[in-house]
Image (cartoon, rainbow, N blue to C red; front, side, top):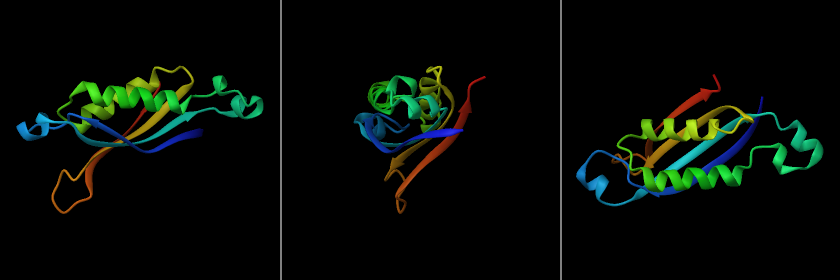
Length: 117
């Protein structure tokens, strides 16, 4: 299956369980792989025949900045389901990381894969 990549998309939002984490937005890093068939878009040079990565990025940024999740697991599920709403998407891999969340680590996070049922 073909893949559309969105790498190192940086959002700001409330994520975490502690009072400090919930008191102000923090960085949230997304890496997304969208599984879709891009042959028609490649032949026609028509973005409407593909998944528009700019639209997906805007949706993810808007969601992350407003939802206020407690866990990266829940945020990853949200984003996967959001992307799977596009009928051209057959599956998605979503990595969500919180840079600097754990001392002595660059980031912590989760990675999930979900497919159209």
